[in-house]
Length: 280
Image 1: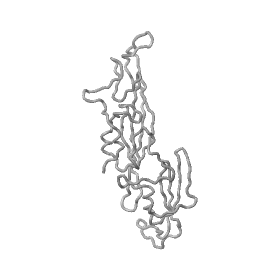
Image 2: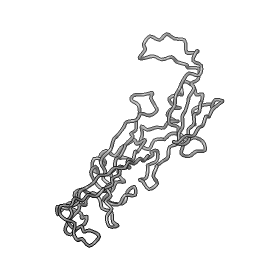
Image 3: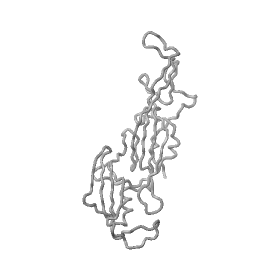
Image 4: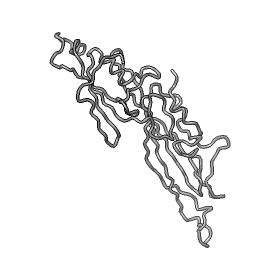
């Protein structure tokens, strides 16, 4: 590292909670070097494949996530008159800035059976269960004893479990906007997040713009946080699993894919390109 710095006494401070390991470190850097130090610590997002946040020493999955500055000697600003509040700041040209850096645990990806994360990015995962009763016609059903077919007046309904899978892709510099648009509304063509082919619907994505370090010239460099929502519909029947393209047929009875002769209800696709940055 080419930027001179010194870690202060009493640093670091470390603690653990349910979210993992956290730490805070305090440094002295030259006041004029504070932007460059921030860029080094928090990473460069302005260029494809730019640098990432620095690690906490000895902990591979702990990264710097926040940095705060304050004058090391707040009572000794440069002697000058400030006349424009929106154009001038106190300066400490021959003094130091105290840099307070916060670290936390950031796993590259929460689910090892999920998609691969690109270098400099990470994936978090959450899930939520849902479900609904779906009417199924009485045709094809029989009583388990000797009383024969279920009468046509008998109302039958099957509980169809559904699960929301939320994958959030963090620190994305060049999101694959076109791919997101093309794959929205499609089904997984192979197992994905442990879900059988055809049972996972890609509903869409929420995107949040995040600003990064390097604030000295023009607009701040930025990256994106993209939350992908997948909804699983897994119909378990007779030892098999059926998905979004299946409907219940009374005669002959069973869960069958419906088609119009040339297409199913939903197209299928490979979801892995959702996690590949677009080319510049």
